[in-house]
Image (tube, rainbow, N blue to C red; front, side, top):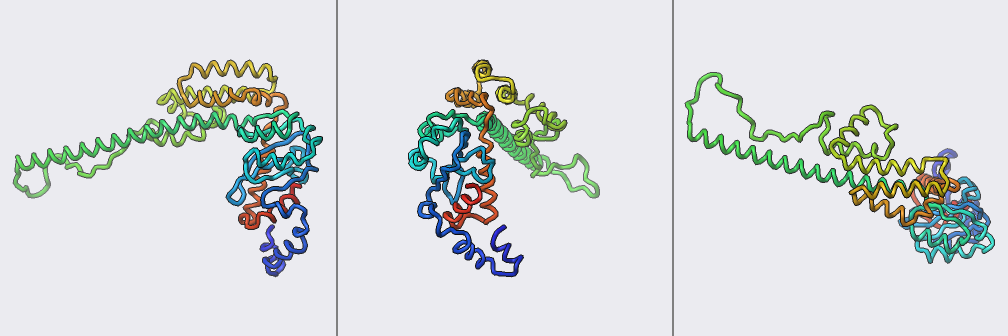
Length: 354
């Protein structure tokens, strides 16, 4: 609840209440991190063995947040917040944490960012870096999305070509009719005109329609969400639409099947790191037979960091805690209608999650 909404409830000026809370009641002016809160805050007492690292946007800039998973997005969660994502800047702050506490960290989850990996390896040398499986799947789904958009652009170009041909056809017909009228002039007849009904000169172009009532562009647009889901989550109408899509675009079905095979590997709860590695080798062979460069690019991104990806099968850890923490920050920011005073905002974050 904001001070202004609280002021309405107690029939007092909300701005005055907010100013009194900030300057006198909260202890903000006596905060020991006020001088550098604009750029970073550090709470080393919240260190634990299982951490998460991620970035989020505050006041038109990115901040790197290091959080403790055992805090469960409550008090004791926030460890550090540093302006920027550059490894050197973040390391200058994280290395202020006592070495004993940093060496006790066992595992850190992160996304596919190279700068985050550099921060983890230098600040927490004993920790295992686990790449978030959801970010890996998102990378593969992005490849599928690139392929869908490529086919959609081709379909739009084809419809524009058909529309242009239709326009030229109308112009030819109009020219032929004018020539025919000049050659065969008729007397004006009284009463009802005989012969076929004349065609309109501006007859509207209608793109070809598929059996389900969609055009090719509409089909490729409406399948966007379905391509990110497994077939068991499709409705009956969506199944019919996807069957038609895969019939028209077999290469899209090929890419979808490859991505689903990787999803099945991550969903397995019985795989160990060693057996998962064998599954990944089989998946690489499947991708080798694929002719789509988008899928192979996603394969290369996974293969280049295979060991960090396989660490997921040790504890099945994800970066969901960091994403949840980011969501709480965004919700708090939205409740305050944005961040006008960044140091005070960081102070309140430390009170809520520190």
